[in-house]
Length: 316
Ligand code: AKB
Image (cartoon, rainbow, N blue to C red; front, top):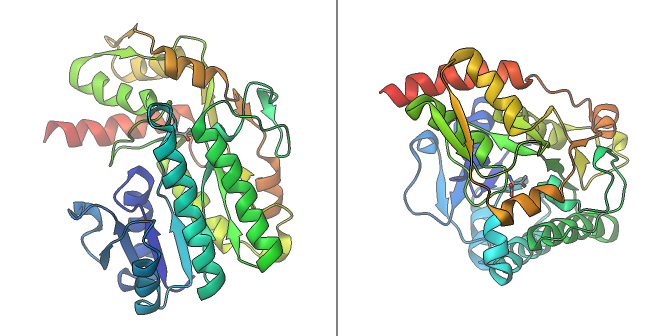
C-alpha cells in the first residue's frame, strides 16, 4: 500500500484507521473521505475529500488525482438502522460496493470491504462459528454483507481484482461513537458508567456476541491488506475474533474499576432479535493460519484502557 483512500473516514472505524494508516504510510499518502463536509478533528492533519460512495465519476477523479492503489470501503448502514430503512441499506451497502468494485476493475486498485458477524443467521452454528458455514442472515444488513462477500469473491475470481476483507465483531472504541448497530451498547456502557455510574442495556443478559477493541480492528484491516496474497486461501471474508461476552460480563469488568456501577435492562426487541440470530463466538483459525491474525486485547485489558482513556476525555 502506497497511496490509500479511506471512504467513510468520519465513521467509527474510519476515524481511527486513518490515524493509524497515516502513522505507518505518511500523512500525505492517506486520503480521508466522507460524505460529511465537516472534517473530524482526528483526521484534519492530511488530505480530505468529500465523497459520496455512489458518485462513481467523482471517486474516479479523486483516485486518479492521488494515484490511489488501495481503497478502504467503510461506508455502510449498520444492522438496527438497516431494519428501519431496508431499501436505503441495500442502496448504500451494495450500491456503494458495486460502484467501487467496477472502479477497482477499471483503475486497478486493491479494495478492503468489511463484512460482519451480521453475515450469519439463526441456522449458523453459534459456537465456534466456522470460517465456511451456512450463511442465511435474517436482517437486511446481513443480506448486504453476504452479498458483498460473494461479490468481492466474484470480482476477484472473474476479473482479478484484489479484494480482501474480514468479518468484524462489534467494535468498541473511545474516539467516535458507532451509530445504528446492535452491538452499540458495548460502547455506550463505558460512557454511561463514567458519566452516570449506571447504564440501561437494550440487549438481555445472556446475549453473548463477539466483540473487539478498536486497536485490534484497525490492525486486522491493515494486516489483511499487507498479507502475502499467495498464502490467502480465503479473501472475502475472514472471521476475526478476540473476545465474546454478554452484558453481565462487561458490567463485572467495569465494576472492578467503578464498584458502584449499576446495570439495568430495557430490552429493544428489534436489537434483541438481531443479536439472537448472530453467533456467540466465531472460530478465527483461518485468519490466524493464512495471515497471522492475533489480537492484543481481551475484555480485561480493553476495559482498563477504555476507563482510563474515557475517564480523562470525559472529565475535560
Ligand atoms: C452492528 O451491530 O450492526 C455492527 C456489526 C456487528 O456489524 N456493529
